[in-house]
Image (cartoon, rainbow, N blue to C red):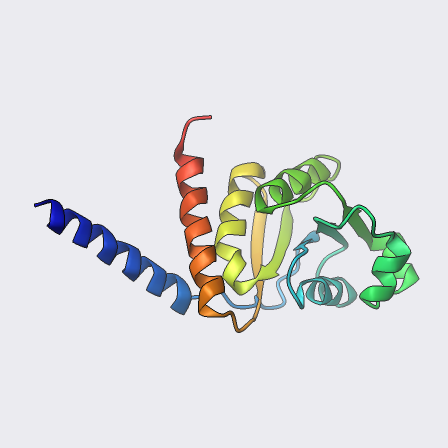
Length: 176
């Protein structure tokens, strides 16, 4: 009886991991939003956010989780962001250190703005957990468009992220 229980748990875990790894989200189409939220930490994320603003698909870009030592001019030079775009449309967030604090930092920034929609940009393997954390922190009436940056993650990365997703789901389910 106990062996069957553990075998069932392992099977559910393995099937969940397989579904997670095979069904990574894709980039979204040219859906316009009021703002684009970019989470630091992976290649292509900031470039995608800049592209969205330059194409006019969002008016503003908030980059969450920027190292406190990075100056706006350094950020602009590193990611080839024009001075005009930096001045009008890019806000750097320096408070977040992980995905949960990204959601809190973005929620704080959104309190100062009257947006009805945002585009969330992160890597494909990170989107499920980021989306989950953001759904907990952001207002329910805010439309969040998920725009995943394609990658070719290693099995180790997928395994770690899947376990983080499970841990986040468990912690969100606990009363707090």
